[in-house]
Image (cartoon, one colour):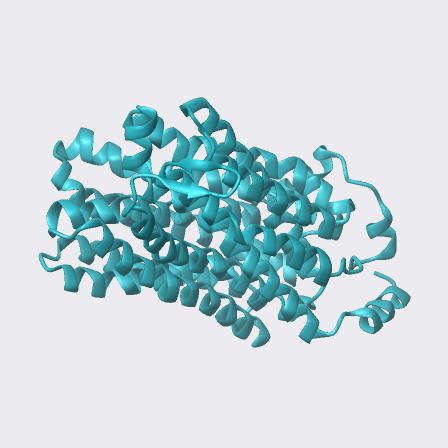
Length: 442
């Protein structure tokens, strides 16, 4: 970057207060997205009864329909974020996933619900690539980790809200055999839950479109002015810095699989082995996600910024590895507890320490990427994280339970073995990137 470009950047950075307002709006949008994404998990039995579908089909609706299309849609949307108007991209995305989430409430068959869920995934795939790219143009690199960690943490906040508020709405609707809605007439309560859950998306669409501005892209003017780089150039950049990208893309994705393991099977463990009801574990786990998950992500970003300010060039990856190692003893211990209260007390720090990785790891991507590659590289990360984490994590626990331990109630041992092994693997992969990150920043 030339001296003129550096001076230009210093003069034209937006006010940080407005940058934090944009973070706030993006967090609201992320929370809305997670409610629309996860409310289906609370409606399983009603959907099975009404649409006459199997557990396997429910699993396809929860995982494949959303995660696979979300992951692959992120690639072209990431490329679009590198040159297009990110404000418009996100606004259209919110409108699309809101309409699709409401359409889930109109589905009369498995196929219709599957298609609606895929469109929810495609719409939500706009938020992270364009959102991370925008924030990288609102905050200087030395102050970027915390805003990105806050945005990432909103996903865990949204998960908690989905469990708490979604559970309340469903409980209220569950008192009625049918629900009458304006224009739609008489529908089943589970369908009404989808539609009501989608309503906040209308507010989020308008709020984002009318109050968020498209920031000027940072970096060299010549760099920003160029079109999307060829894919071979992006791949070449990743290969050149393979240690760093391997640590972030693979290491952090493996650690994401841990959280999806827990999210999928902790409720089953509490119900099968500790005698809890679904609402009881829903409220308890929702509060853990709300406070420990969100707090862990934000703490990870804050800690990485502090270490970087002290000259620790591999700060982000050190925080990711520390996250895995601190979570390990709690992940091993909580399934062994015979008391629900003791298990919750150990699960809370397992989630807090485990989620610190997601405040430090993903926030490294916009910092080390050229501006014109940012959206695409974030999208590639999302592709890997969703395939490894969301699609792969839950099935690992299921395979241990079915094929190794052989009984449903022995899921407690699967929850001890599988996530612990993933934590160690993730920590090892992240450690391999320390040297490369130091050299990159030197």
